[in-house]
Length: 306
Image (cartoon, rainbow, N blue to C red; front, side, top):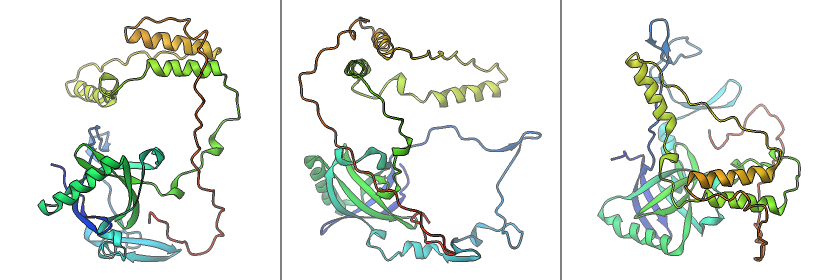
């Protein structure tokens, strides 16, 4: 059973739901340590005090914020735990919105919220069923590890999941990254849609979605441990130059269908069907305006991640 990361309550109007928070994901990747290659001695990080020049223990180390040069404000764990915020003890729901209105770029890691005892079972189920029936998600604020965060509560099966969210001003404006304007024809769009259709599926299960990197690394470690030849990497296909976009789309549809055992007609994109349905307009989500650089001062304003 996953360990509890945080305990508190969900505050939903005057309804309080005591809960425990557990991570909803697991890390199955292979992790490495650092070693001295000459004798394979383990390399470890030592924590040295810059002023005294000696190694200090964990008990001697605390948090601090460099407010100005040579001026540090120490912050204790007790002070972080007792922040003067209602969200320090509870996940405060502020609003309910349609899930489609949330830009996925703002959504982070997920955590399972479990009811804390039988007394919390009924209000927990009430909130879960209300979220499911409304087809909405809850937007909430909570404070963990010395900072207030924005979160989204949604239903997954019989459980309520809390997703960390970025604040609006943490999302960068992508305008400067976009290429110069280009024209795309309706035929090319139809070709891309045809390719998407051949690649569509109802689930994300199967060999295509396995962590092949971790599997390959495990094989290399096993081979080296048993002093066997390393497995050979397959030759990657060399990407060709895209001279004709329509030809590339047509060939891609042909290969996708062939891989699924379907008959592939290489001419099916030559005469795309005319669209009869009205084109839907996608409203661009507003991006936060870029802030002008603040004038430099000797003291720095604490950032949210401090």
